[in-house]
Length: 457
Image 1 (tube, helix red, strand yellow):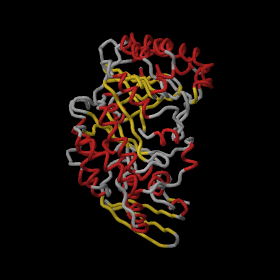
Image 2 (tube, one colour; image 1 turned 30 degrees about the vertical axis):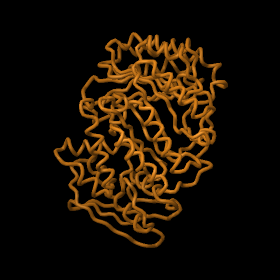
Image 3 (tube, helix red, strand yellow; image 1 turned 60 degrees about the horizontal axis):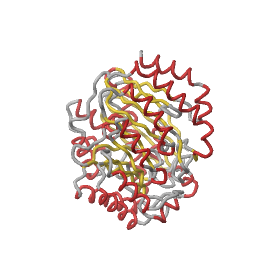
Image 4 (cartoon, one colour; image 1 turned 60 degrees about the vertical axis):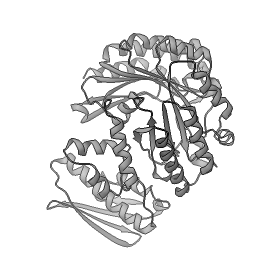
């Protein structure tokens, strides 16, 4: 149990507690105070007292809360790190987007490295952030009116054990599909006047290729009037068990420029363990089929999947590199509520994951890929991160815009979250659609009206 005299702090401090195995069972009392240009933090943990003082000038309520969170989390991280003897790769940083903090420092005229060093970030991850910022050069643009379009197709051939999304096997949800496609068509028609400078379109899921070709065509045809500037256009083809030339032909006809093949692993044993209904051979067949089309290809891998050894993961990295997709994203397993693996898997051994991540960085760098976006999630195994790697000039605009939150995001469909940026991104307002498909369908008209009100604000 964790308590604090500052009501806004316990959720922030719990993010630090969760980084350390067994720490959630500790009784932690916190007292925080700001006076004379310094932040004072006192912790009592299982009867032992700890205190810290950090200088920092707070001008206004927002800055006060920001610095208060920063120094309280740093103090607690240092205490728990000393108690456990464990130093984590991102130190006391718990936010989803480390690069946003780095950009904030740079925009204030300061190098970001000193702050990251203070927060206990490893030298390797400081270098990674530096490389990501370099990889975003020429694409990163914080400009009023920029917008990305996301279309949600929450249908999959089967549900993977690590997945916490709302997707369900399409056999169970197909009864809603006709009404769902009609709702998307209505949402997209209503969205057209709300879109400014369209930077990218992303059709995700789920597994969009779980739809039949004619069903997928309905979605792409509804998008077509909105994409008039030839911007980047991505469709998550997803898994090879739903791949077909007919669906790839539909994508070509509607100007899709990029597809995603979500391999996750090239080990047959791992694929079976996570609930996939295909083999590595099927993955190779999908990549071979995609070579006949003019798409850039994104490929996803996950480090830390159930039972997978370091050697097996490294072999998957090598297999992906050999297939030469334009993008390879290396995810770290995230054990969220709703994922079967969270129920089955204890905290993964950090050293094993660190070896996997380190190998992927070495191998991808040697193969000519550069990191261009990264993000973190709560409950990530080993407190690591997800990193997207790209060949030169092949970075995905949508990934950069979404991860850095530098453009509006107009999102349609069930579980779609739209974001509208105000004051140059200083304030972000969100609008979420229901996760449940029947509820989404019932509220469609209201969702359209609410989104229009947000984007016309």
